[in-house]
Image (cartoon, rainbow, N blue to C red; front, top):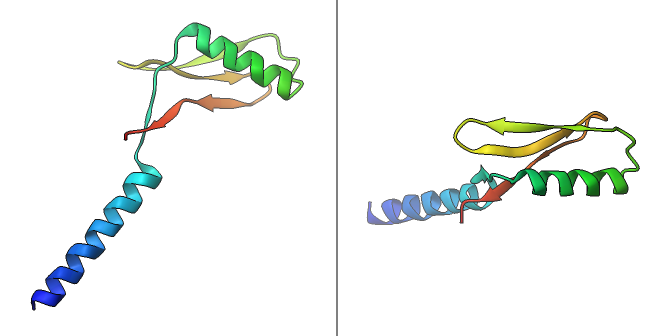
Length: 81
């Protein structure tokens, strides 16, 4: 019985660690200047010719990304750790 509990504990710990490393990300806020700089980088690398972009805003967090008129979308996701 003790071996089974130990095995179950290790499996649970492994599953939680895998989830934490792989999926546990939060949206990080950006300043308007950072969003503009990231959009300019996208515009030059993708040779995008759209004149403007939209901020993606979440309540209580502020700007978390941008959406370009060409369809490109950037979300600032950073790990919790």
